[in-house]
Length: 360
Ligand SMILES: [Cu+2]
Image (tube, rainbow, N blue to C red; front, side):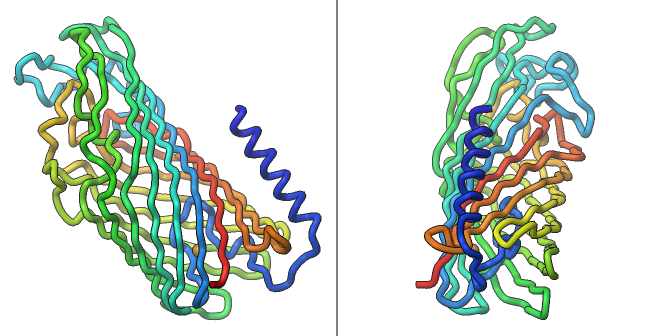
């Protein structure tokens, strides 16, 4: 709760600083950017440069098969271990993830060489943290113990060009053409607790790796508009893996649709509501070093579909030293999840971002 308190305090300070200033006529509007959880939503004017920092935390807890909750006891007694038959492998899964968090610190830059094209680059530091329960031996529901794995480091790097499509009265649209460069590691390891009460260090399963390992294409299209105090937008984005990575697998393709509405409460603040639909494929191929009686080691137990609802706030400084500094936050919670499971259920996605644009 300390964290949410400091965020609220920061917002109050920011709001007061902004309110204390005279209104500026030509400064940009808070709702000219999409909710902070949406990327590549706006173009810049020729010569404009923007720097941004986003912190994103995704929280997951308990498991779903499809949309049905399953306990670790059900998983360990009913779900077959895909590696059964190999030496020392039990017939069913014996290790079950119970909670996970993914923290991302994203640094971004945007630059517009012309009014029609904005270039965008983003790099990130990712930290994955997962709690597990291990069941004793080859059968039964006796809990041997719990353990935590954690991986952290540079994630993948994204380069995009946003290409102007049209701009008319209150609406605008652009193409998003991006690539993801595999700068994130896919050979992370962690110490685990096995059903035989040993603690070897093993290659972590797919969700704990830091990158995709493959060059990915990131095509998309964004449409946005606004009239008076209302704003709206829709974005379609995909992540298409171009081939197998060095460990002989590829993560599932990802398709995302975002649609949002915003309302400008004042010249410096807007609120937003967003719906996000997401579909992710299973892992194709497999890393032979990822072999353990745990659901996450099975390439089939990845991806699925999710519908999230998010509420957010965008703030923009209008004058003085805060002019064109933006602060925004957004909290998303899933309304529906249908997962290729067993798989951990997403409970929330929180995003906090700072952006600053200026002309060179
Ligand atoms: Cu920008």
